[in-house]
Every structure is written in C-alpha cells, then in structure tokens.
Image (cartoon, rainbow, N blue to C red; front, side, top):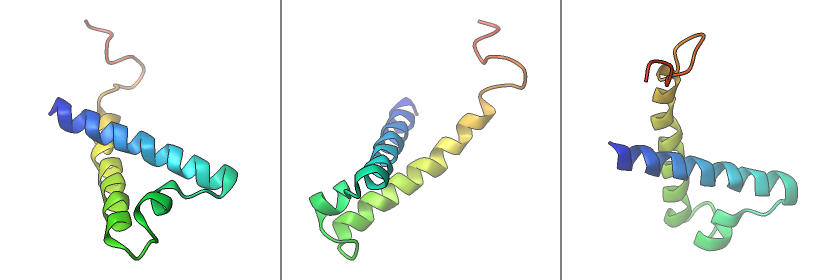
Length: 73
C-alpha cells in the first residue's frame, strides 16, 4: 500500500503544481505535453490526478482530534 499511497500523493502534488501554473501564468502543462483536452492522453492524466485526490481522502482519518498521529510512538 505504501507504493499506491506515495504514487497518489505524488500525482496530487503534480496536479496542484499544474493548477498553480494555470492560475499564475495561464500555462497548461498537461495539454502542452499530451495534446488538447479532447485527446485520450490528457484525459487519462486528469483521471489519474482525480483518482489520486479521492484516494488521499483517507488521510483525514490518520490525525486524531487534538493531537499528532505520532503522539503515542
């Protein structure tokens, strides 16, 4: 599971940087690399980033209220 977790987190970070580039400079790196939004390469990248975001929702349960998850270690 660590590989899936790290891959999902990496894709989510890449997606965040992608949105930062669009917001600041209007530069869409995914469309530049894989073609316009109608092509499958671009759609697959967007789907993978979206699935990574959904996968990372589970991290909300790792931090208990009022403390660190590393508190008892």
